[in-house]
Every structure is written in C-alpha cells, then in structure tokens.
Length: 269
Length: 269
Image 1 (cartoon, chains in turn yellow, blue):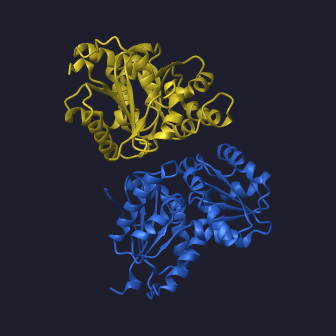
Image 2 (cartoon, helix red, strand yellow; image 1 turned 90 degrees about the horizontal axis):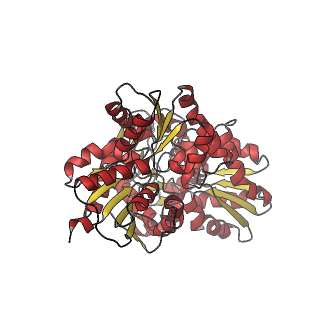
Image 3 (cartoon, helix red, strand yellow; image 1 turned 180 degrees about the vertical axis):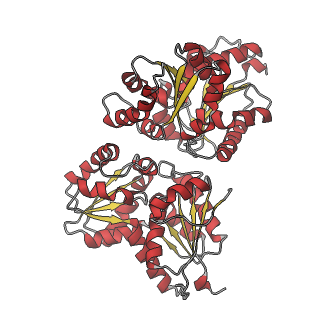
C-alpha cells in the first residue's frame, strides 16, 4: 500500500482529543484517521509521569498496530509528560499539541506575558514554559492547573449561564488576569468547549486552542515527509476506545461537532 | 500462622475507601489491615460493568496475594457492579458497603421513602433498589447519580460555605427532597466528607454512610467465622496504591482522619 494512503493515528486519554480531530477533518478531509480514546483509564491529568508514560506507550502501540503513517498526540497531558520518551521509541512522525500552541502563543503575544491553563500533570511538567521559552526567550509564562475542568466538561457543564463552570473558571483565571497576560493557551483538548466562558472572563485576551495549532503542525510534517494523501475521496474515521463504546458515540459528538457515524470498537489491553 | 491474626484486606478505586478504614480502626483497633487504592485507574464510577469487574478481580487478587482473612469492598461502585461476580470466584468472606447501608436505611426509615446518591455506575446497577427491597419490600427508593461529587471531594471542595459543592449538591438533592425521603444513603465512600452540606440542605433526613454500616457487617462476619483477632496490640495498616504514593499519603489523611504514617507502596499491575 502507498504509504501516503495509510491512516493518521490520533489518540487521547478520552473524548477531548476529538476537538483536534475536528480541526484535522476540516483541513485534511481526504485523510483516513484512526482515533483511539483510552476511556477505560481516563483521566490522565492527575496521574504520575511513570504511569502516563506507560499508558502512552500502550496507546502508541495500539495505533502502530493499525499501520498509521503519523501519530497526533491529541492530549496535552500525554504530550507534556511522555512525548520525549516515546518519540525515541517508535519510528513514526509524532505531532503533539504543546509545541504548536506554544509557537502560536509566542508569535501572538504583544506584551510577552502568556497564560496557560491545563491539568495538574501538564502544569507540573513545565512543558509549556520550556516550549514557549524556546520560541520567545524573554516571554513570561504563568500556568494554572485546573483539575475540575475536565470533569465539568465531561458532564456537559460548559455553557454560558451555568454558575458552576463560571465560578470555577473565575477562580482559576483570576491569578492570570492579575498577571496581565495578553494571550492564553487552553492547554487541554477538553477546554475549547469552555471558550465562551473564558472569553467572557478575559475579553481582551487572545485564546489559543490545541486543535488549530496542532493541525498546522501536522500538515507541515506530512508535507515535509511527503506523506499527504493524494486521494480525492472523503477520508474515513475509525474510532477505538478502551471502555464504553456506546457512551463514547453518544457523548463524543459535542467534541467533534458531528454525529459519530459507524461503529466504535472496544479495545482490551 | 493463626488465621485470626491474618490481616483484613480493604480496597477502593482510590481514596474514598479510607472513610471505611477509619470506622474499622475505631471499632477493631487490634486488627491488621492491608489497604489497596487503585489510584492508577480511579475513578470507577463512570466505567462499564465489564471494565469494573476486571478491575475488581485485579484488586481482589492483589489482596489475596497478601493472604488476607476477609475482604471489604470499600467502594460502592465496585460493590454494586462486581460483588456477585467476584464472591463466586474467591474463597474468602467478602463484605460490601451496599447491603449493610441498605439494611440500616430500611430499619431507619419511618415513611418508607429512601433516597440514594452515588456514582453513575452505582445508580445504573440498581443494587441499592434491590438490596433495600430485600429488607423492606414496600419501601420506595429514589436514586440520583452525582458524577461531579467525587472530583469535587478529591479536589478538597467539600466545605460548607464553598458555593461550588453547595450549588451542585442542591441540584442533585432537589429531586429527592421533592420525593419527601426521610432517609438518605450516601452511596459512595467519598461522600461522608460532604455530610455537613448535605445535612444543611436536608436537615430533617437521616443520613446513612457506608463506613459505620459496613464495619458492623464486617464485625458480624468475623464473629460468625471465628476470625476476630485475639491480639492486644494495636493493629498495623499497610497502604498500597497503583499510582502516586506521595499524593496518596498527602491527600488521604482527610479521609482517614489521621496522618498516614509509614510507607505507602506502589503496585504495578
């Protein structure tokens, strides 16, 4: 098989990565995609580095068993904690979410003051601080761990007018507002659903999401390695999860912005 | 070794089961305890029955490898979804949390209207409805799934005066208040920490927690099988977790009501 027609592999700890798939689909509609959500072990954001690396290896090996031509780590926690480790292990181009968003934030910020919100693990890793510094050594980065946001989004609590996410986000964002950041990275693939509340709380701030940034990086990587599909047909997505395919199909559509057609398959590790 | 001096095994998906250990310690101070918290795969409450059964088998086998004389399933989700399945598999007395709390609620309620709050999996299982009916066939049971409570408690958001758990609990409890329940089972071992907010919202309701109920059942089982320790020495607790021993030691003390002394060991499945 022509390597260009092989699928792109995308994985996340759960549903959030579908916000990245949504962007990939809109820019690369002819690519086939294999998506894996590790719903049997979600969330990754509170776990240790060692555990996250082990889980990411399992995720990578699952995608590689489907003969993917490239992998997108559509999970900030996994990318922050494990990308360096796994890139060395597997012979496939790997695109993350952290570096692309950091690059975009560094190019966007006027005052050099950049905020990042993410899971505990993402913030603890320091990956965003390191990546932003590599693009803009003088930038000051202010990061806030927001452990309640993933559970809130997973429960559908992300709409303007809902006091619970509004109170919680105000608490988390207040220290970043005080630091006068002009750019804010939503450093978790669940957070784009909270975009409206965030922009209400910080109306003058540029908000950077993982999806568009990592899709740009993916396109650049596929072009560089001559891996872009030549097909004119609409690409096919296949979904795999490690628990509850039905609930994935039901709840995933809000993340990907379309119905999840076809079957979602269960994977047993 | 005298079987009576073997340890009692207790497991939970994470930290919540320590509220049960707290009760066991206060009533059976001379027993040795092996506690296992599956912190690498917490939470169980949103997962499928098949996955929960697999995880509970792993938990049981870990405790049995430490030669325990009895097992307490200190997790309502695990007990609701997997107890019937695992009781058949292992040759050890198993005490859960659901049946003891159901029995106590049936004996306590005057108007026969009993509320239960728990995780999605616990409510979906119907285990409380079934158990309460077995003790009080005419009782009416009203169950509400409360998926945000475990993340809130794990983040330390359980104190009176904190608007977030107060708003969320008011939402979850409103339908049960409307049903005029006079007894409410806190059907998750995390929820005792929310006792003060719950009793403020439902001041005239009898609140039943897993810890005291299951400890009574444990004592009855150990007496029945002549397994109570004869030792006069203070019992020893050993803690095992599947991720982040340090964070377990740091965060567990609020659940168990004492410092977690000594080492917490990491288990790799």
